[in-house]
Length: 130
Image 1 (tube, rainbow, N blue to C red):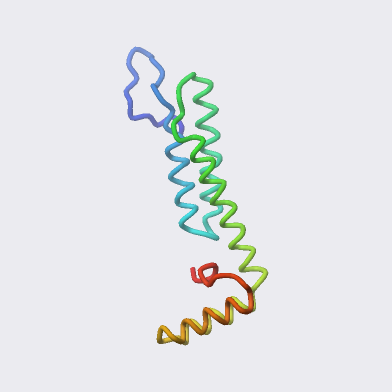
Image 2: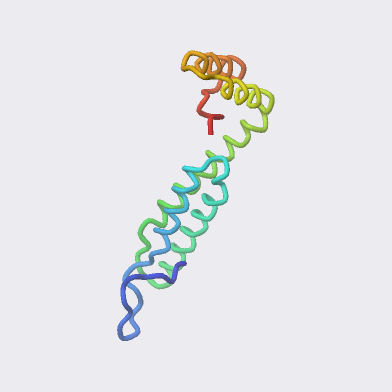
């Protein structure tokens, strides 16, 4: 993917900028939006950013967004792994919360489920309501 450049190459000139960092940023952001399953996308964002940076250095061209893609991908990995660990550590509470939420037909009963989750784990309900 690091070879994709929308700028035409004329007279054998190298591209003006390495575009692989943009792809890495895209995958890193997608990984942030899909936790805990986005760990693969986030890792791909980190790898793609590192490749874009390396290729940019070899060709002596800038690699915009390469560092940003590595940072966002790293944050996605951390977020995905932390949410995955919550799901593993609190398996019983997760099952109870999901069953309670499935039976909750009003806002007040959903709030009761949220309060039960918070009292048993100390974590916000957003960690499990994915």
